[in-house]
Image 1 (cartoon, rainbow over the protein chains, first blue to last red):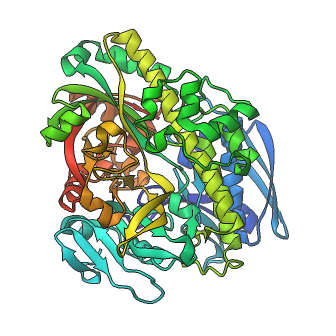
Image 2 (cartoon, chains in turn purple, cyan; image 1 turned 180 degrees about the vertical axis):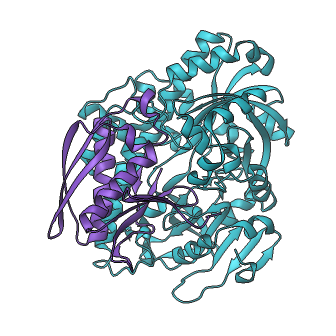
Image 3 (cartoon, chains in turn brown, red; image 1 turned 90 degrees about the vertical axis):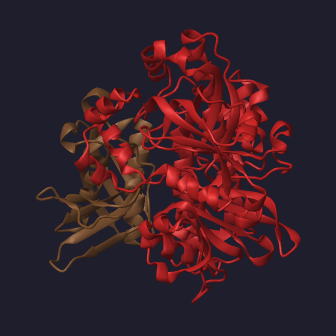
Length: 148
Length: 476
């Protein structure tokens, strides 16, 4: 059964929310850019503690999608792809938007199984519970469930 | 789930009458207890699937149904191309052809007990498991395409296993109609170093003992006796399948309006079977099935190598290999007429009954082995397809226990090292690169697999044959 509530990690701009079989990732920020960056960190946190990942190597990422929700899924899937093919984890992000495209840099390091103890690989970001919006406090929220 | 939403049509069969945009009814197979504990989202997803173009007969959910993406996990639905039927990337899911195979070893539990630690360590050492692990098979562009076209048959041709194995794999080890040219370079790149790897999450490799045979006649036909040691392998199409799923989900979402398809949930992304996107997806998805079959075949070879070192008297023969996340073209009888349908099984096992022409000759009289994975601390089951199942849900059954708790909740409740210690105390050896992964997969985070299997048995979806319990589990 799904449980209510979520794991709020105050001040870090991200949290997880429960899904019966998988995990929801949520970025929270004063700007849409920060919310997308937070969602990237939440994605890393599904796999390992982001604090254990040193931001020593930069990777450039660009995506395009017809709306901002599909763009969030594309952004997270681009990170999944870079993690899988470079065998890396990321802990710092810089996101910029230009119309319907996203230009970002992700900083991270190669996976060290002993140090990072990666729990699970993410198969992909999904359209489930997918939202990019401003909440009642004016904060940007960028979230979806990821399949693990 | 609220029982008042459903009409009971049998002890374990519950119907949802068509309403709103539903084209067919919904049918859930489960005990009252399982229905009671089922997420309301399953109801919503079963009814959403029933609205898709060209769906025939009903939108089904198996006893282990839980909240999935678009389709419930445990969802089964078939579409008729002549009625504008669709193929859905969401209805197949990210891990295309994730499945289970079971190998007999010819060993008894007393043969394995003295070398269990060595066997566990050797399997963990030899079979790449967990995040970032890579295999020893590296494919260039030409070999990648050959693998995607040939599946387990390609793997056997490369020396991984024997031709006899192929007979005991769905599609005889090679899914026809694969189109490697519709698999993107990104998907191929994700796979180039991942052949022969187990993956992570709920994927596993287990050495198990047969603790009970419920049907002696079928047990004999399957070569299973109490005390026998078997090996189960649960994994899928790895990064390639995930990438195909991701890319076609997006192209089906963005092309839905063009095809005049109204999606009640974007995760139900689909395209008409007779459309360019639909055909390209079918070709890519079939290539993904072949990738999963080749992957399980390579892992089988590695397992055989380990047994040859540790227990050289072992003879590992394949009972069967089943796939869970697929869309396959099958002939089923609709209103007395044999009809060619595109059957989606999302987290559901094909369970063909006796006499089906697709079964190997040696199993045709008894029916298809149906392999149901449990947790590392409980049990797995072997069932057999029934004649009734063909009429109930296109010859389909449940696929596993299904989670009862999110990963997040599991992490709060258990520590990996304690789980490993507790299970070692019960004689079950766990080997995993990640203790957090073990905690997330703790046996208590899953539903009772026996209840799910009993419900499938009582509903005649498949009949119980044998119960297996783990001795060793390698977790990704």
